[in-house]
Image 1 (cartoon, helix red, strand yellow):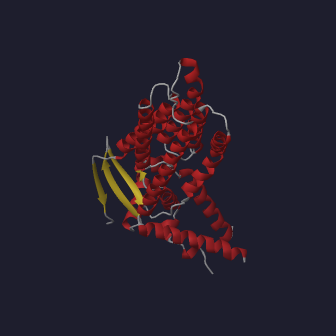
Image 2 (cartoon, chains in turn purple, red):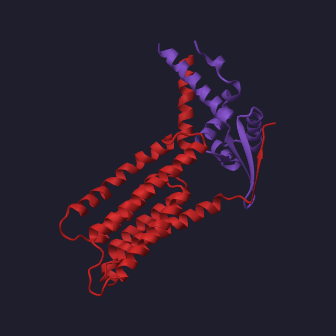
Image 3 (cartoon, chains in turn purple, orange):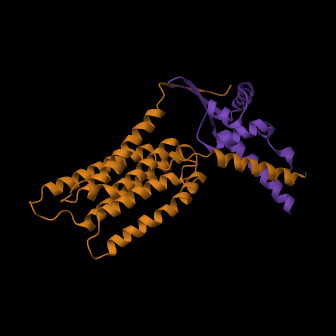
Length: 98
Length: 220
């Protein structure tokens, strides 16, 4: 029987789940856009992104345009982990219906 | 709250966040570039063909004019599908992603009037105003782009407005502002909008994408 203990704890944290969800919705996100969408402080967002980057879920790209810009994208491993996370949630919902 | 209710709540939040954040570019920059060049080239060929006709000879047949532009549309649609597929493969997404399906659902109703007008144009035995057909094509193409405004990048929305306003302008332009004995205004309108507007759009999208330098950080 699937339950919340089977969910990936790194993704399940509220802030990181929101970040993973946004990253799954587009090819990549600039730091400022993520910050504006999630209404998080710089420090909080950086901490979560660093955790996800260390786990290999998020790729970081630094670009020089008019000014330096850091953008974030899901890696294949991150996309797969997010998909697995969703599958567990769906299994919990299905199991609850039976 | 039991596990099922909690899981449903999580899924609802995830879905709503993803829907809000989806951005879908229905026209890729390479498609705009190739489509723009094709449209300008077609306009030039039609104009050149008309110039090479003997004085007093009739201009390009109404049906042939529409057939040529519909053939160009078919080519550009095939090219767009190719580029969208390439982009989807590169990013590990399916061709008909949720964004693509969302865009198709938004665009579909805006295609009904131009499709009906084109059918009416071909079925009518009498010569029909090319201006009306071209104005409908241009204006409704603009509406198609504007229908994706909620999840489209700003550049595509501006392109949509440019097409819509040009289509409206075209309805009033030719007969009110000058004679068009060779019936070339509709051809020039196609070249200016589907040609030049798309070229400007492609250049703007590319210019905004190219960074001066890029560094990808590996996981620690």
